[in-house]
Image (cartoon, rainbow, N blue to C red):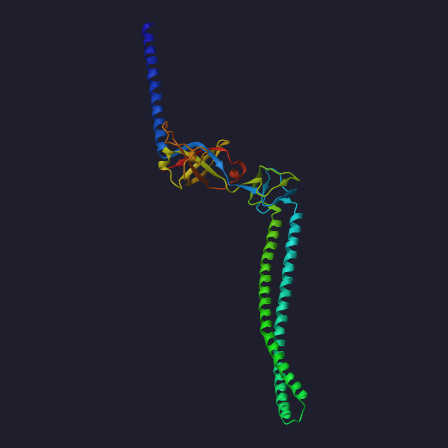
Length: 350
């Protein structure tokens, strides 16, 4: 009986070394495999889905008249989403249009005055010509009457009358000649008035354009195609200019932000291929590529960035945000990924 138990005991003693050897070989294979893997890959689970989020802000104030969307609704760029009460802006547009019409009428009146002043110059010049003729006739009559008076053919009263007529004609000529530059100055003044009134037209036209622009802002449209979220308005609510009404998550602007340790940045390059797996959909993965690197670490953008100049300095490994572009805009990405979701990122560095 003792001879039969000896081989069994020998075999039992060999089982443990064999199992230990297998474990050590497996551990060695796993270690080598992981070592080789991480020589050509960088990974991080400190990553999340990001997207271009467009806040929609009211550009003018007013009461909300219509809301044409629901929360989490897909909208397209240019869709009308909110309409504000525009009666105040309609009145302002009418006022601006009336002021513009009045300015144009004033220009017409001023231009008529210019034309009238120019015709007065022609009249004044004609009066000068007529006065010159009268002076010539009065001089001729005065010369004849003077000769007749010297010959005692007429009375002194008749001679004085001819002399008075001559002096009156000369005075009338002086008056007529003085009217020509006066009318010319009147034309110049009226032309300046036309220019001043015409400049008001540009100002009034700008008021009309501004009133139309303000009126157009009462119709709020979607700035991009995406999902409406975070609605902050209700019907009848008074909104102010600059108030954020809601946000639109652009469904074509989805990307990944991965925060790699600074010790991992040595082998990361723009354009390297990336495998991404979302925590919410661990059975599905998609591909991307490194698009850009942040200009500073994430801590530098925090409210209270670290200051290593203090005496109680403790070194902490910093993380650098890396933007990863999703290569294919697939239905899975558009349907399932939402900004803020956590993902696992693997970068192929070689």
